[in-house]
Picture (cartoon, rainbow over the protein chains, first blue to last red):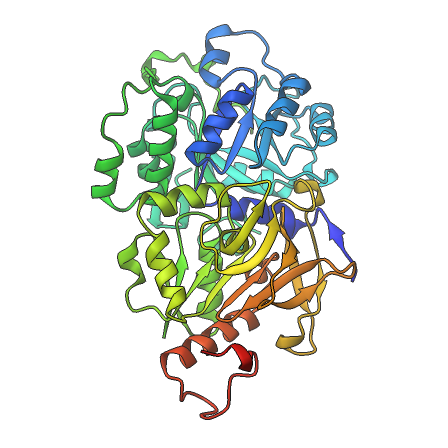
Length: 177
Length: 100
Length: 212
């Protein structure tokens, strides 16, 4: 039997397994346990949740690998972590840690004004944010295996996420771009 | 890829919604609009009772189309995160516009 | 003939689509009332820890066990295999202990170790199954009444059957593989009407000694 790891089917497939579920931001191993016990399908390990990033200002970067590892050791569900837009070295570090998904995220301060990460070059799958169909297609073309329509993070205000959608039927998505 | 998306009416990868979801009703709203799942950031651990809020949002994401269950799981959750109105947020403070 | 697909969380839409491809109506099951009128049930891949919470909260455990005990066929993939096992090694209590096996969750490691490859499944014929393994479990122990349906080259067990319950560690529904779903549908039709198909003969996959 020939075995092939990190194929498109396995990258995209993990996201398929998460469907119908909730992925929760956590900043400590204790929070990760609470999320897992509550029925989260995955956790996003980061040092500060978006509302605190917003409050603190300054440059927001990849989280401390020790903290990400502590969360990976605390739960059995998949662990995701964020890299800055375009910061392929942060992504290399996260891949070396063995995280299950990398979020190339606008919540952190972008590291490149022009380019996103070449996600095809990685074995670990990526999720990326998008506001419209054009952005989604560009990210998938760069190798993203999962998308997330971005509302305004850290506001607790669903207007941004909600109004970017115009649903036709469940599972069928069209963008108002 | 564009042709495939036009034919299927959906992206070729799974698509979740993120940003601003802080109650079970919010999660059910985006699910009814066609999301395949949700990311919840500040909404859980900035609420009064994170474990209950987390569980309620999980239940609402599964039973997004059943208003009776949504009413049931929304009871007695304590205060959600405070939130910010979009008008109060300067364009330069917006994160979602990053990426291109 | 309708086949239910547990739709509390996970890749249930892929199973409904696979059933649709063989002309069988798939019914999404979120509440006990959704089980009415179905001839068999699929437990899809997903996160078993999350699925467990949703199964218990709305009282799905007993009705699904009753369905299985009535002889209706049940098919679990990945997380579904975990839910069907007697013992989850280093894990939580069993959910639907219908397969006398012990499974280990995430047995191959993390997502970077997820893989795909061909797997021989003799009861489905000579043509191999293309298996997609995503953070997949492994069966580490099988009890006496359990048939091993497939192994990896190194001997590790990735598909099993005990009477009317089948489970795979991999995802046929992600690879356009319909034979498991056809088998399930055949078993459901036989359960519904024992005279179906070949009439007096047992279904080829049925263990005659154990047939009830």
